[in-house]
Image 1 (cartoon, one colour):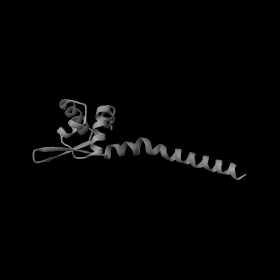
Image 2 (image 1 turned 180 degrees about the horizontal axis):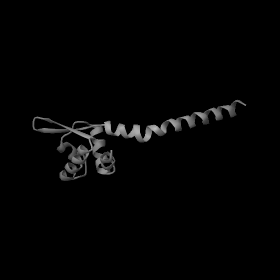
Image 3 (image 1 turned 90 degrees about the vertical axis):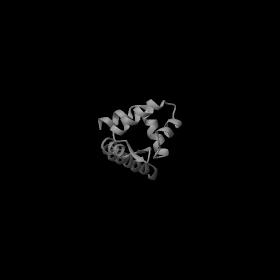
Image 4 (image 1 turned 90 degrees about the horizontal axis):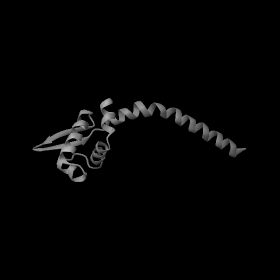
Length: 105
């Protein structure tokens, strides 16, 4: 998970993930055309995203297509956000009950 957090820490890499989310299965050239980064910078960021398993690549002939892999992000959500969600939802439900009790009386 450390690689995922490190990869997500950079705004350029998050921008690449956003581009893949918007249009999955892009070539390096297509990604470079949408971003204000050099081809070398995009390549470097993609390698880190691949190492973190956030991007998967598939060769189609001579083209290398890049796809967003949302599984590591979902794992983070379940581990770091999901466990706090239950308590928050319970607190909101209790607050709602109290507020409804005030308006009924």
